[in-house]
Structure formats: structure tokens, C-alpha cells
Image 1 (cartoon, rainbow over the protein chains, first blue to last red):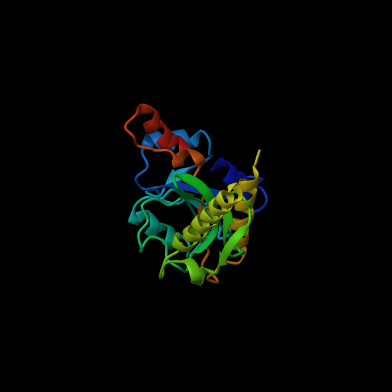
Image 2 (cartoon, helix red, strand yellow):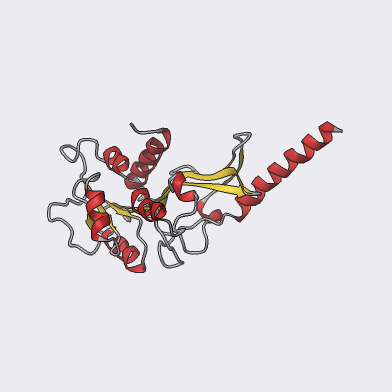
Length: 178
Length: 56
């Protein structure tokens, strides 16, 4: 998280936008004090926003975990850029499809091993990448991979393509041994 | 030191802030769980309980 803050605001707000990190409304005081040792000015979504935030300043919402967190993030995005990082316990109402998935990286497994990744680096398309061959197995637009009106990708097709790639390699290896 | 994934995430977020999918509505999301979270968290151990706060 600290690296993300530095990346978005390399001069700490002296020039360019400031970054305000907000933790979940459920974050404990212990967690907040630990986080404050690594991220300056971290607060909770329970608290009021600092007065000195300008319209271009960026708010990072760190691991929202209840519906109230997601609702507050959506409300804040009406005034400032809001970046939700690693949302937990998401349901269909948590992050709607009008949000932008900027960066997504999820390992996909088959037979208990990681065999590839579903990756998205905005504004590029979603991409299924084979871990062994590094080949792109499939790409998707938002409309092709997001569930309904949500911002959550359907992992089934990427998973099937990776499974097929693994099976095809296994069959080829077996044939070569004969 | 920022690694390649961090740089890519930064670039993607900045691109999304500059031009979000829904014009004028910069609600951005990103997901990249740290590798430690792929192991079982919340298994009841003290190590796991401490790790929950650290991986955030």
C-alpha cells in the first residue's frame, strides 16, 4: 500500500495530487496504528475526510469489507478519484459495473497448481496468460467477462482455457514418450 | 523499490483516473492479493492472526 501511495503521489502532494488512504469502517484501532507507521495520515472510513482535500486528490480505500465501506467509496467518487484496493467479501452490490477495474491479477489453479493468470491492466483488455508457455490464451472486453452489472470477472472461461492447455501438453508429452 | 507489478498497477490506476470507463465517475478498483494470502489465513494460529494485519 505504501508503494502505491508513493507511486501515485511521488512528491507527497507538494506537486501533483495528494493521496489519502482510508481503511474499512471495521478496521481496529490496533490495525490503524500499525498502518500509520507505514502510511502517513491513514484514517478510517468511519472518520470525516480531512478538510484540505482538493478535487484532484486521490482517495485510496484499503480492503473494504462491509457494504457500508463500498457505499461510502461510491459516494466519495462523486467528488474525488477513489481507488478501491483488494475489496473483501464482495457481493453483487459491492462494486458496480460503472467502476473501472484498473489492475487485476489473479492466479488460476488446476490440479492444485497455479497454471496461469487472469490479468487486466487498464486500458488494455483482460488477458488469460499461460504460466508455462507465457502465451496469451484469450482476451476479453469488460462486456465479455464481467458478471452482469458488477465489476467482477467470470473466471470460468479463462480457467477452462488454461485447463485445456495443461491437458494438451500432458497428452503431447505422453505421445512423445511412446 | 517498486517492482514490475507495482509499476504496472500505478500506471493502470493513473490511466483509469485520467480516463475512467464511465466518464466523470472515477471509481477505480484493483485487485492483486499478495502471495502470502494464497496460503491459508485465519487457520487459528497466532502467526496467521498477526499476518492478517500485515498483508493489508
